[in-house]
Length: 483
Length: 100
Image 1 (spheres, chains in turn yellow, blue):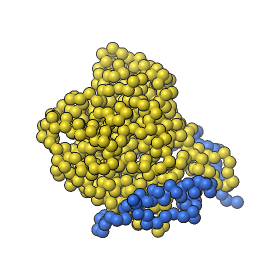
Image 2: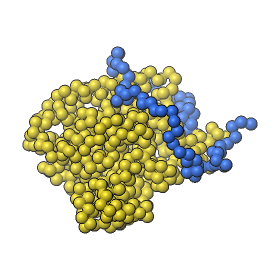
Image 3: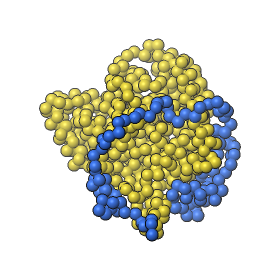
């Protein structure tokens, strides 16, 4: 049952071969058994999960089930869920029981899905290894000496270790795709504006986007059908017709034009990663695709641009954490300013403080044009590179991450080294394009390698088709780590 | 290697910490100074790019802000919201005295 697809689970639940309560209990038992070694979840609440499962069983019995009714999902702890502790991986929100649901959460609730718990993450989604979580690092289920990636590392580990059927993530600079790659699962960051950001704790609002993480492209498509859609409470939510993201899964790939950015296949990529990615491209040729070399000349600037824009937006967003209305307040202080400064100093971890300081600096008097406006101008150049590239191809492919999962603590002292591990993913967020990662083999030390697929705006259904056809022809996505 | 167009001194870092409302010890200021200068070394790569005539891009979808009717859409949830506040009294959030 734990290796079944969402479609198979949906059929089994509808046929009453298993109840939602039984399925939820199965996963809760697995979490109790395996989570202590992995630390993938920050919060589980069996009582609340089983109450949802019971309601789902009643809905199925009444013949009112939707596709995902009764299926247990995990939710990244960045999504506010009513009555659930919602920490965003921070001490700042160690006591924040959300009084409301994020839009994404209410969409799952309306579909009758079960919330199994809240997954661990880098603090305020700032990190690429899950080591910045106040609740301790997540371990990679393929090798517990190694990181799962980040920031959606708890979700990636939980999906890979079969501690949920599938789960949600968010991606500001690669936080869905990189952990998906490092844990050997599939993940999709949709076009900016497709999934509502309402109730998703803000990091960098012009880049943040929610998306599904699961074991196959087909599972992601079914989740997108629930997660995507217009929401008036998010001012950047796009008003578009509802679409069925599974509609094109079975189309053949004959004639598909794959663009390979020469900059992604240059220095920096590990030889084991290169080997797996090149084998995947060869497989696509067998499936009828053709390959064209493209250029994204400004993509090398995406890391510097991102580390101006994302901290600038974060410094503004995180000013709301002041110890007044919710969250952590320092126990002792002399006056109001001292209360702000101590609450924030004690409530935020080192990486979050670092980014708040970068952002504060680049937005401050005298540096705004040289850093912030300059970065926004280069952001346009980066986005225009993709517009040119998509004149020659239907999708772009390359590595998701330059290496497989590194060891815990390996990049601990040097923030710049950590930042460079997102070199292939960040440009996609800056442009607002959809991006995916799917498993395409194993590298050194038998760790999973991810293939990145970048599509044009709103081409998610096409990308899912491209990923699904590969997953019909290969079995990398169905490999599981030894428990 | 990255060209460093400028670097932050201790006074700069102290000023940024104050603006960001972050209490920091001298040791923390020192560490932050080193790490921030490393990061600004990376960021300095931007300065070599010619961006004359390029419009700044603040957002991937060039959309106008949506407007809505000026009417109340949210219900009062004061009790629920204040149940998770650090300190409240009689429906008010308590903070240290700011006016003598």
